[in-house]
Amino acid sequence: MVDDAQLSRSKAIHRRTGRTFYYATRLLPERVRHATYVLYAFFRVADEVVDDAEGVPPAEQRRQLEAIRQAALTGETDDPVLAAFAELRERYGIPDEEVDVFIDAMLTDIETSRYETYEEVEDYMRGSAAAVGVMMTYVMREDDPEEAIPAARKLGEAFQMSNFLRDVREDVIERDRIYFPLETLNRYGITEEQIERLEYDEAFAAAVREELRRTETLYREGVAGIGLLPRDCQLPVLIAAVLYADHHRLIRERDCDVLSETPSLSALRKLRLVAETRWHWFWNKDPETVFAKVSAVPSGTPASHDHPGEPMPAR
Image (cartoon, rainbow, N blue to C red; front, side, top):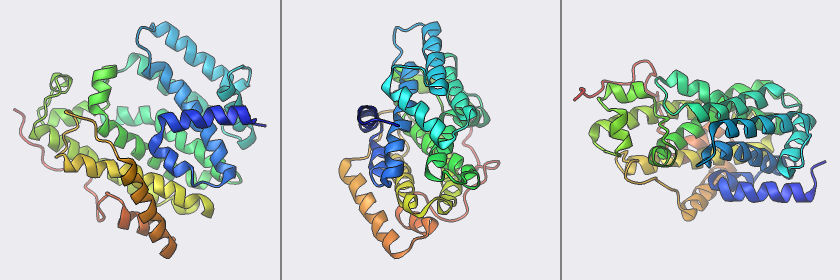
């Protein structure tokens, strides 16, 4: 049983490192909320091995991640967060595979800093984002999670793509990583070096708009599955989707310039979105309808992934 000290430590990590998701987590029923604190803390403990790795040799990062994998799967650890996660994994029947693909994605961050195609980004997100959605589904719908898992994966990927688009500047400055698919940049005549120099122009803005459209398709597909979750979990997950998607509004308001600064939602804006979503939910309990009314994701038929529009000529 997860004890108070483990829960307190996990909650503190969640509050400190996941401010957007924390707003939605607080609205979950207690049976899910406490488990979510632990899950999120586990994700952050592993993620910080590679995100805060300045001066740490790759071999040591790999050793730490493998130790986290072993602790998560066996429970043999003195770390309160890892011990709590191992207990939850067993209680809710979270498959070992989801732990493995998550840790494997973190290992990828040690060696890989560029992604040539969206499919490569998608493969990475299978561990770093989709696995998170799967684990959350096992906690929320512990009796029969399988039906809701495909949409949960899509929503997890949507959240992460929003983060990638928001954090282009931070990722390249602090970690020398570009998660933006290079094939998209190339279509608009943009080089890695331009991103590294943080040089914004209209061609870059057009590339960002293309990836925003692709990500908004993921939101629609993910939100369509929220109704498969238990009723007391639907509103909090919907609010999380609304909050993450609101970064698209910020990005568009800046004409897609995510190179000069990193867009950030204010606390007041988050509270307003929570209130608006709850108000619409009071009158209409359909997640897709409420998301269309409140979120920054345009309604209507999204652009095709295969035919995203005419690129600007390469310079």
